[in-house]
Image (cartoon, rainbow, N blue to C red; front, side, top):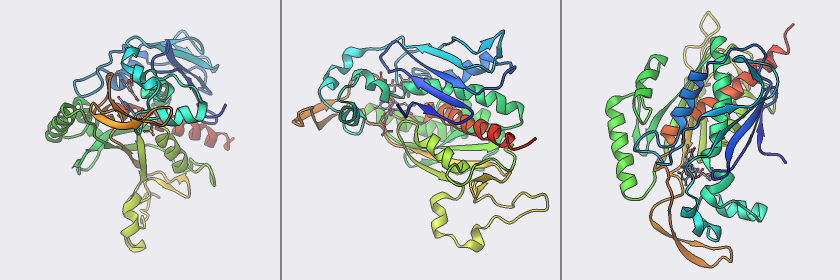
Length: 356
Ligand SMILES: Cc1cc2nc3c(=O)[nH]c(=O)nc-3n(C[C@H](O)[C@H](O)[C@H](O)COP(=O)(O)O)c2cc1C
Ligand SMILES: C=C(O[C@@H]1CC(C(=O)O)=C[C@@H](OP(=O)(O)O)[C@H]1O)C(=O)O
């Protein structure tokens, strides 16, 4: 069945439900002979892990990855890399009401309509628990890209109406990662954390935005016309749970600009003075930083009573149970980086296949 695999030369397939035995994946196309840094990989998993701070879901998972194939003596073999991460802290009884009723705006209703059968425990396959596999695969891709001088930095730049308006440079990454929210400002981090705590106290949720900057990408990556680089990045980002928007470069602000303001004028080294294109023109990277933003909704499970319907479409009221994120963006930062890394490595290898 379509839907659980992503990519062309670098191809990730994932499996698993939130309250099943394990989550895992098969990653194909990783070149042979690459020495993996397993501590670095675990760091990315820890950045995504539930229970990492007081402002995220309190489900406690160790998220230790077990590699089953494709790696020998710490080096990739070029064969499929099979891996899994066990689920350790499911509390499935919290979800018994969801066997028959649907949470408004989660995926309970649509999974039921599509398959006529679903694992209602913790949202089953629709839970963002699945993204642990993306982070394992993306961390491997990110390490390979780093060796080629390509770095991927995502960070939170908005929660609710609190927005970071500073100038990004990769030197800010350490600062942003030192805050639980993952925003590059200590002052704003405090305000954002406070906002998330308040929202959680009200039993509610709030949305936010992640910006991602990819530096060191050579000109030439991207496959027009249907597989444009920004189209693939857009698909990768929109496949992440709770994502509602993707903007590259000037994005929706371009609507009100004139060509004379918006054109990125060349400099003598083939770069451009401005980067409204966000590093991609005609679906092909132009050598400038790739720069995009991803909008996340306030997620569905709220600890307040709401009217909904059951499987017979009768009205029932439902109040969220279980352990949930009041705001998902701090934990989504490594997921955005992982999906970006899978796309860039895939397109890098495709581009190399054109060259002798
Ligand atoms: C890191 C992360 C954590 C999430 N945690 C929750 C959560 O605790 N509760 C919840 O209702 N949704 C959560 N979501 C969102 C749901 O997985 C998502 O809304 C659901 O699958 C429906 O899909 P859609 O919102 O993309 O349409 C999370 C998403 C991400 C990226
Ligand atoms: C467990 C994780 O996050 C989960 C994402 C999620 C959801 O609905 O997306 C709902 C909550 O868990 P459950 O699936 O048990 O309801 C979160 O705790 C994780 O990211 O590892």
